[in-house]
Structures are given as C-alpha cells and as structure tokens.
Image (cartoon, rainbow, N blue to C red; front, side):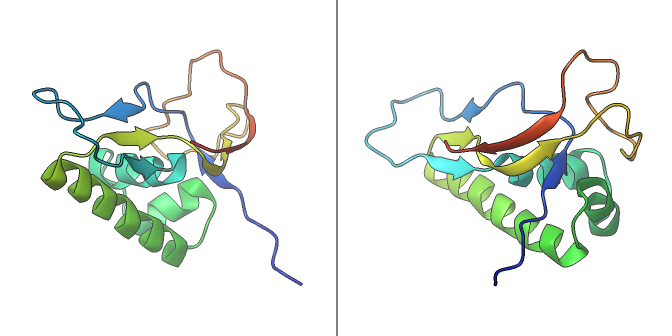
Length: 124
C-alpha cells in the first residue's frame, strides 16, 4: 500500500502566476509549469533567506523533500530565463496555512489577510 501524501503547507498563492519575455511572442515554445509548492520553496529560501531545514519545518515536510522541490524549481526558473519560455505557476498538492495555527516561521504572507485556508489539489 502506498504511503499517504503529506500535504505541503504554503503561506499564500503567488500574486502573479504567469511570467515570461516581454520583447517577443512565445514563438511556439512550450510553457514551463511550476507548482505552487516549488514556488514556495523559492520564496522561502531565496527571498526570505530561510535554510532548507527552516523551509521544511515551515512547509511541514522533510528537509530532503524540500531539497528535491527546490532543485526542480530552480531548474525550471533557469530554463525559463535562459530559453525564453513562459513560466506558469499553479497546481500541485498543498494546503494553505491557517492563520490560527501560528506555525509559520517569519515571512508568512497570510498574516493580516482575510483569506480562508484549505487543501488544494489543482492542475495547471
């Protein structure tokens, strides 16, 4: 029997979910799809300055899981920047943090926002 999925805790959804080159059309290139949990690792580690251990605690997963997610997210970012592909953020298996949990390490973007928590399983 397969091990049940451990939901990844995410503080908030990205304000923008589509990024790409502004100076020329897509030219038939396949868009790069990044999941919300991949986006969250980039936000927590690269923007907020958390370690992989702190990021793992924040997202409620193992450090090795964060490491794998982070490597894949950075590969997708590089691919989009270098090759000029559109980057789409969405989907994945995650749960928005609940403001009442008080489990977020510094940098939680939901504090003070009127957004409801809940599990998400979305496809791009």
